[in-house]
Length: 231
Image: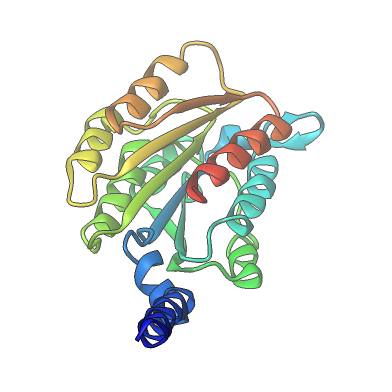
């Protein structure tokens, strides 16, 4: 009798052990708190001032190189979108209307693909004014498509709004929208006095304000942000 009971207990323990180690059980336990999909929007300043040089290289090119590295480091479940602002028209009064109106979407909402992403900026460079509010408005349009997706905006600029918009107001609206979007701002080698507005934009968007004087400093910021997205 004792032998029979012992055998039954042994079988029960083995069965439980096998079920715990089985792929089905593992999937059930690991999927309890699955990671939310991530959507990253990059808004890159292409206004005329981004043609100025830092360490012998245009600020626009420095930013572009670091954005490429950042995009490559994103989690596999991330979708990315990139737009340029200030790339149209010119930085004179004759080109202001076009420059302030047009936000150029260069990479639609999709997973990262190295060749397509890097080719998206071919032939484009710094030209016009700085419509930061309108650039953030374009991110609001993307935000409407969100459904339980974490949305993070990275605004990269070397100056303040020059098209009469209110980027602080738009950043606040973005955060209050369906996706509770977070707006991070990277100020790249800009003139004194611009930090105030950029800090307010980040605060209104419940994000962080970062200052970068060089491409290397921007790279460090993006490395830290990438690690957060992988958590």
